[in-house]
Structure formats: C-alpha cells, structure tokens
Length: 95
Image (cartoon, rainbow, N blue to C red):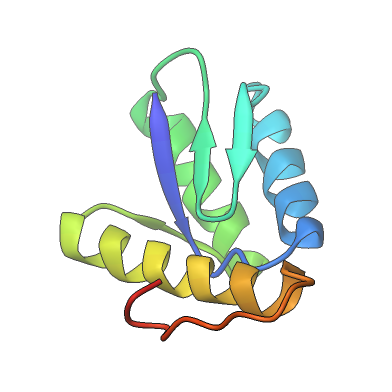
C-alpha cells in the first residue's frame, strides 16, 4: 500500500515519518519524499492514529490525486535545489 504524505522535504522528515509508522506497527518498505510504502493495509483506527501523529509533526496524509501531483512537483523542485550539486542549465518548468 502506498500512502502520500504532505510536507516531507528532507531526510529528517523521512526519519520522523518512519518513526510514526513504526509506532502504529507498520514498518515502511520504502520511504521517499512525499511517499511511504507499507506492506499491508491500514485499518480505520490505525489510519486515524497515524493522521493525528503526523499532524503533530507538521505532516498530513494526501488523499486526492491533484494534491498528490502538486506535492510531488514541490518535492522534485526541493530535491533539485537542495540536493543537486551540478548547475541546472534547464528551465524549471522543463525539468
């Protein structure tokens, strides 16, 4: 199951989100900026607990497709600006 998380912008964010998933008993299979993949589905109680714990740390679950696309674009630009050591010669809209 893949879940989309709003406001993940750095490696520290990944660590915090991972710890919140582990608190509810779901070890993430993979974590990328804005995306977390877990092996099994969350039940309603676990999902509510996860939402509350994520919100305490400034994150939130994204449910709709448009918001996921917007968040992914923001994360790609953050990665480009902060984590890319080479000079980018292309326009950001092209990237």
